[in-house]
Amino acid sequence: MMKMEIVEVSIPEGCNVVLGQTHFIKSVEDIYEAVAESGTAIKFGLAFCESSGKRLVRTDGNDEKLVKKAEEEALRIGAGHCFIVFMKEGFPINVLNRIKNVSEVASLYAATANPLKVVIATEGEGRGILGVIDGLKPLGVEGEEDRKWRRDFLRKIGYKR
Image (cartoon, rainbow, N blue to C red):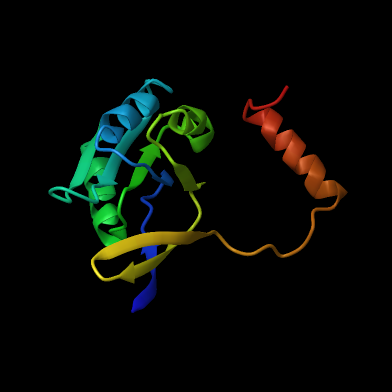
């Protein structure tokens, strides 16, 4: 019998989170390198849920508090071969392509600072991620003033010229 539940991820103030699925214990070191090489100012912690062998949560990072947080949230999610990265002093846009290019990474579910909920299915001893709920639903469609604000904002923060 399959059971479904929602796990709400607790994101520390000022942090972003990346949630994905990978397939091999080597992922911990490779994802570490991908994030660390994205910018020396980025502080992060990551955790990976091993789904065979000792079935441990494997962790790494360069910020002990974020490593602990990743460990806690990975245990709560508890889905085989999932990984979670908490980061500050950097944004998902700075690391996503590098993480996607890690040969073991199978998919990404979310990259956000918004409230995040993970939809989980449990069957027997197995547990997997069905999807995520990222943020809140839209309230409408942008108008011309909103479009101008968006364009100006991207230039103000240096992502467009």
